[in-house]
Structure formats: C-alpha cells, structure tokens
Amino acid sequence: MIPILYLSHCGSSIGGGEKQLYYLTTNLDRDKYQPIIVCPDDGVFAEKLRNTKIPTIILHLPSWRKTTSLLSRYRAAAKLTNLTRKHNIQLVHTSDSWLNHYLIHIKKHIGIPIISHVRNLLTPMQVSKYGFDLMDRIISISHQSKKPFVKSEVSTPKIDVVLNCVDLSKFQPESKKNGKQSDKFVVGLVGRIEPFKRQDTFVELANLVIQQCQNVTFQIIGAALDTPKHRTFAKQVRELVTKYNLNDSIHFTGHRDDMPQVMQELDLLVTLSAGSVIAEAMASGLPVIGTYIGSTDEMIIEGVTGYIFPTDKIDHISAKIVQLAKNPELCIQMGNAARNHAESTFSIDRHVQKIQDIYMELLDRN
Image 1 (cartoon, rainbow, N blue to C red):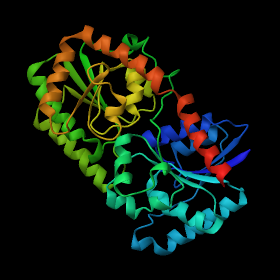
Image 2: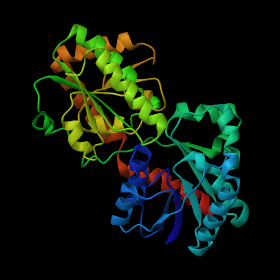
Image 3: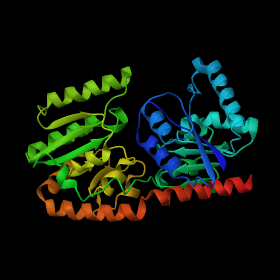
Image 4: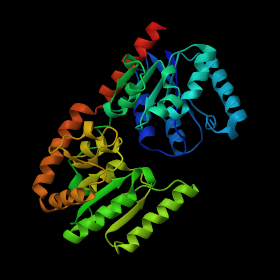
C-alpha cells in the first residue's frame, strides 16, 4: 500500500471539511492506499478517525504566518517532516489550505508530491500568500473557487474541480415526515455560529418571513467555538432574536452530530455560506436556498432543486421561503428533484475515484 499523509483543519470538532476528509479516507481503495492523518488537536473528530482504525496523530501546527509562532512552527514542521520519513509517506494532502506552508517544507526536504484542497473562496492575494504556485496539485470544490488561481496565473493543469460528496445511504428522504415534530414549515441553517455562516442575516430573514407567514419556524443548528470572537458573535445573534421578538420562532439547537436526523426535521435548508450541507440536504429530499458563494450555484439547479440569490437580496430570499411554505406540493416536487440530483452528482464513490485518479497521476509522474 502507498502511505498518504493528510493534514486536517482540526481534530476537536467536525465541520464540513472534516466530514469530507472522513468520507475520502474511509473510502479509499485500501489495497492501494494507507491513509495517515495529522490533527492539530484532539477531540471528537480525531476519536472518530481512531474508531475506523485510521492511524491518527495529534501534532499542533501553529499558524505559519504569525510572527509569534516563528520558532514553534519550524519545530512543528521538523516533526512533521520526520513523521513523513518515518512512515515512508509518498504524497501529502492537506484538507486545509492554510497549512500549505507545512506541505512546502516537506516537499523542500523530501521531494514528494503535495496537494492542497481548497474549500474557501480566496482572493488572488491569498493565493500568493499561501504558496499555491508551489503545490503539485490544487483541488477546488467549485469552478468559482478556481477563478482566483486562474487570475493569479497558477498553471491551469494543476487545478482540479471536485465537488463535495455525501453518504447517500445515511441521508435519505423516505422517512422525512416521520422525523418532524411540528406541523409548521421548518427552515434550517446549519453550521458553526460564526460571522462567515451569517446567522445574523438568517435572523433578519426570519423576521421578514414571520411578518408574512405565521406558520413557519426557524432552526439555527450549530454552536460557536469557545473563542472571544465567536462567543461575541453568538451573543449578538441571540440579541437580534430578542430584538425582533422571535424567541418563539427561532430555535437554537446547539451542536448536533446526528445530521441525517436533523435533515428529517426540516422542510427547507437555507445556506448563506455554501458547503457540504447542501449535498446533505438534497440527498435528504430537501430543496435548498443559497447565495452566490463558493460551490452553491454548481450544486443547486436553479428553479429545480432550489434557488440561488445574490447575498444582499434577503427580501427576495424571504419571499421565496414564504412561497414554498405556502405551496407544499412545490416543496415536495423540488425535494424529489434534489434527491435525484444528489444521487447522480454527489456520491462518495464518484468523489473518491476522482481524487484517486489525481493521486495515480502524481505518483506515476514522481
């Protein structure tokens, strides 16, 4: 087997990137590849990996660009390089492009291929800062997130677009009605409570909808990280709920690790930041409303499996929520189309095979 080293964004929590890394590493062709994963901290994701018998190593990886971590980052990079030698690693794949410089350090000392998986929409300046031109391959989750690399004149053959995937066996639409605990139309937003996920805008949307349609409730599914920035934002979101007198209409579920069940409890998913949750919702037979961020417009078929709006058109989004809430037949029709699209586009097998093809090309060349 060919040992491949993966660098994870974190080991203490499970977000969209961690889910995608889990799908990939647990479905690799184990006759060919042996995954070994480095997590910068310990916790639920690292434990989940260990439960699958995937070798999982905890190694703190300080932010490369902070001057305060100058010494510690080189110590961590040296440990990572020694680990790479010890396990005879043939290729390194980071699930977090902010860790690119650790890959560059390994390549400089050992000369093996390196891959950066890009899950965020970057600026051309960030492309330059994080050394993408030194990657042997870049995997982008959408054509939109590929554009900054093209603008920065990164070699186009280096860039592959591979959409996120979902476990179609776990996310199913059949029992959705059985999971609902209310006759009301339930709209959910899933993700860590942080500015990028825009839960504050979701509250603004809810306020507009409730003024037009009383038979709708909203769920904010996720929790804030225990940092001052995230705690402050979560407090602001709750204060906004109180300001609009929406405490009976908006429910904070906290962190949920039973996402298939979560989807059964919803009638509609709204996402204001993109991500793998779109595929999860569609596989569960839910229509999705999103904005033009990341891979959203490449995952949702406009008017068929959901709707896509500019980020600032919250009045248009709220009007569409009201329309779907008042037209359950349309909602079901779009949900059925969403499941069909998920089956043809977001399967794990399709996703993993595309990435394994990239591995083979790099390893053969090396």
